[in-house]
Length: 303
Image (cartoon, rainbow, N blue to C red):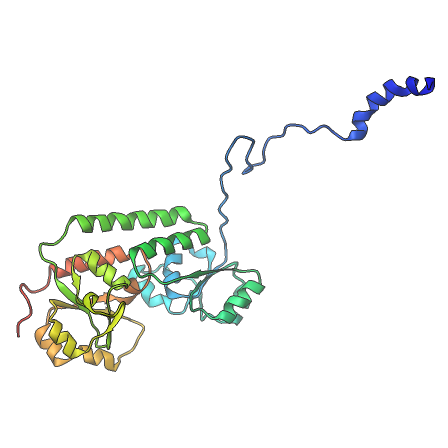
């Protein structure tokens, strides 16, 4: 017992050494939150982005530099030349195939709702993050889509700036309403026209005109032949222009002699992409329509 009591002071001195080092206060690493502070989220920026859909192509080119884009869809070029001339210079294209995903090795793929399921499955197996971007049928949808893509590509501030600019233009349009709302319809000789619940209708409303097809009973696209067009008797006819499609019987119908006779000088051509995709330029499309309305002949079409 005496020996144990003799060694007790020595044991007390050695105990901290055997217990391990005492934790010290350390400075947080860069990007690490210190106690009491709120951490700033780090936005990961993918560096090999692949877009498999036209609408995503356009948003991608607006948000990130070309050296972070591995490819865009083969349909992009004509739409880019119409809306963002030269923006796709030097960017490779893809046809949405599994082979291209393997060869290009993207770390992010912007896909559409209807993109090939096999391509999406393959992308996940090679570790690429897949973001499915849905269609836009309103300016609220554009807000959702632009924020989604901006977050996915690591550029939320750029997305915010694009939306702020769009909202400013929409606010200007709303505060400068025309004295008379023209009655218009989107008609290119097809058997259906975009009505309520479509992005085209939202753009027409923002432009300060009334979409004749919005009053039809069907919710989005309604049947609308030449006889229906004559019965509706709009002030102007809007016609989409798709540069990558060739001549068709539909185009011939839109050039019907009656159209030439009664709506000569009252046909407004617009780029299809900006009316079909959820882009900030949809506000510019509404402004363009407003300006074109002013160039129409005075009065209404005459029999």
